[in-house]
Length: 147
Image (cartoon, rainbow, N blue to C red; front, side, top):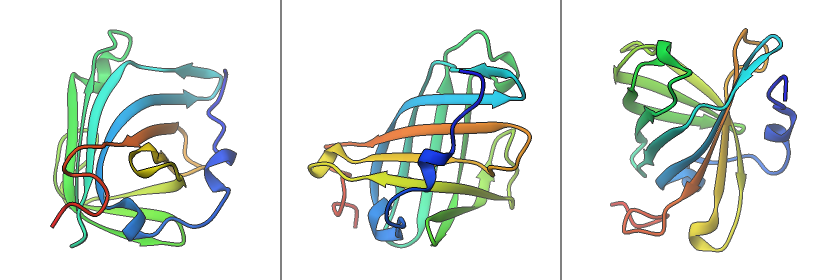
């Protein structure tokens, strides 16, 4: 794979904030820049609350991605418009910055309760392409259970 195919992220119904509420676990990360690509081994969690707040933490276990460091994270509020999620950061580590806006194009693949899959990508015209695939957890913080 030379580049990340972002076209799959723009199909289907638009994601709403209600669709996002719950806890998500990271399944896969795909990165590409020009003709170079990588699939770093990562673990992570992503939480969206009904009140419009989020928290994302990712641990990079791949030795091939030293510039990312071992862990990165950011938290703050979020808005959703036409399937595009904007994370308004309050606290963030590199490569994000506190006060920055992180825009993610979203696709939700509905499953049975906790089988939902969420795909997030960055700006399709940006120099670095990425695709993060998450699945909804079946634990207490699953869809509709965060108060």
